[in-house]
Image: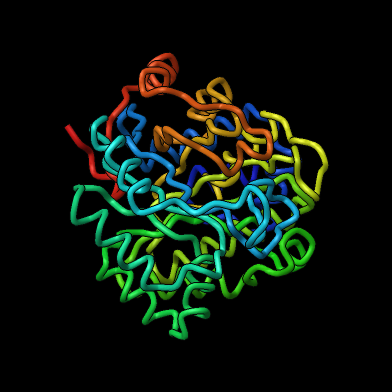
Length: 352
């Protein structure tokens, strides 16, 4: 197996194996990865457009008992600095988004034992009853815990939340879908199979989701590729993933510590993700952790979507990520790379 052989498979549209993906990740130079990832990107999205959504992150609580070693956001129940937003505060944040013409609320928080399913149902109904927004809400870790503390099955939990207004699920909590890694960085969180089963169940119930990868903590290159293969295999089964986003571990103020990977590693990682995930339609930029320059450059390494305007971010910023871009800066970044910005909704439908 050579890089020339692997490149030929990409050019012919043949699915890559895990060893071939590992070869690209470890040995291909950036120019080859750029060429191959751009080929696949334009094969899937022929227009020179980059999409974005006007949305905001809404972190509703930082209370969480799981104590992930990579997280600087959480506070234990009863700990100083712990908080949960009131219904009025939540609705005010949604109002801010709607005033700006936004359509997407990314609703995530910690695993708070005080919040049972009724709280989420009432909150979702209040949001959807007052505002025409898409609720992209609750990671698999939150959903699995919510089902457990509410005494419900996962399907029943998802069905009730869907009736209350849940539209889609973010891919948070995936980290690296390899249990050896998860035992090191988040031993109290769900397993790989539990994360996948949650997404499988949601997809079969007609609830789409995104998929993510937090790389650069303790995993090996082989484990990054295994993560991508797990996503690809489930997508073959359900076709429920709308997009994939990779972001690098942020070490500041965390128990895990360590160093932050660089932009070149990010470009290499997203390009290989584009080549491996032949069945996932969209790849998002990660400007919150990478900044505008690398995010703009990633548009030449397989990325076709700039993600959300975010407006407010509390989770990765607690661990040292400092980038927040205005809508004008997002549009300027897309245009400066030679692409046309196109606004979308969470379902990746173009909006005028």
